[in-house]
Length: 252
Image 1: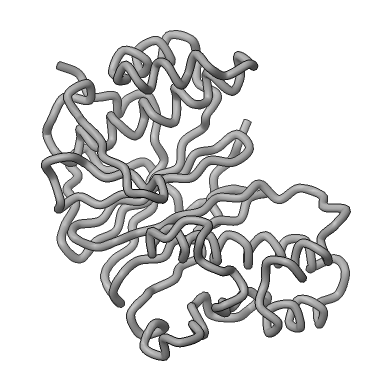
Image 2 (image 1 turned 180 degrees about the vertical axis):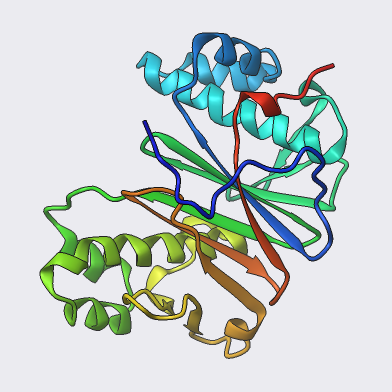
């Protein structure tokens, strides 16, 4: 059973997404069969087709959970029925709501968890990574991190390198997802902070000196054994962290 860190709480009974707020939600992907059945009922035909294409039942169930919970959360914010929501997708695959340009969102899943971010008229990107052993950590860093980040990673003692690697990775992926450029954006062309004790922030983007002042970066880390990050367009505002459960299923 996953134990969420104490800053992640159940939301109040009445919750609205204010203009200066970003709401992040975390949920377990392994849901009981009855909840999965309810979540599956709101999926679109193409989502059900994709779910059916998974070879392993566990992966199918986790996809249903991730998409179903997304629909119920969006229904909560938009006051629509989950089944009525329609999505559009950018060339890189980033989803958006059709007919609603105000509620922006992003999601990421890894291990047994799924992570969501919602904002009002503000681009967001999130990434969640289960911290797991890596036999090729150094080569992955050399291929994916900037020279400054690689050098910083090498300053750490061995017992801190794995968690710091995933902290860096999550922050870089969240930035790319917020940009909406997908994997086409070169990971070695920008630097993020990730050393233990450092303030979480975007340090530098080659060719765009104004970027660090535009984009806000936050570490999320919802549970032990996970690294996560949020990147949002614009500085300031209030970040709220919520835990989803079946009581938040939208009825009607």
